[in-house]
Image (cartoon, rainbow, N blue to C red; front, side, top):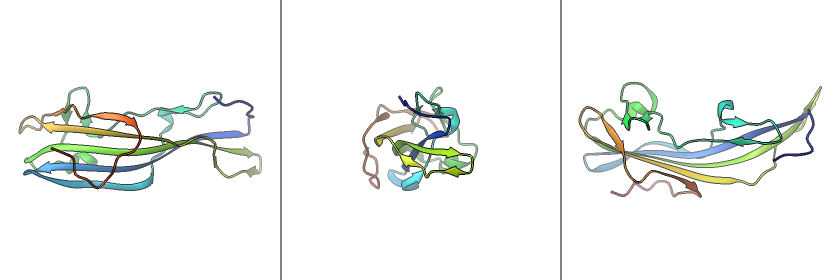
Length: 160
């Protein structure tokens, strides 16, 4: 909750991430995607509110190609979906570390102050683990999916 603000105060949610996607094929794990710690991933305006008095963002763990409603990964398309081209791929694990905070600046006619962090850092991570059900590219979630506070160690293949 923010109080004591004026029409010149501006707020935003800043998120940085560290991300990796591991694919298991022929009993071997291969890291197919890696974004280093500190990669800017600020939330789009659709998932945040930067109008006082309440400032917030929300997110859900996401593997863009994974449909959490049907439990399938659609292999047709671009981006993360193009990582899954081998029919021997049997498992995909998406890991994401995120750090978020609220930033503030004052902007008026002819002046603006630099952005400054005004909140504590919020550390959270998500893991999505999906396995192939059949050769027609049907996938399902395992019991290892989670979103929690904290951070995980990157560069380590998932456990079997």
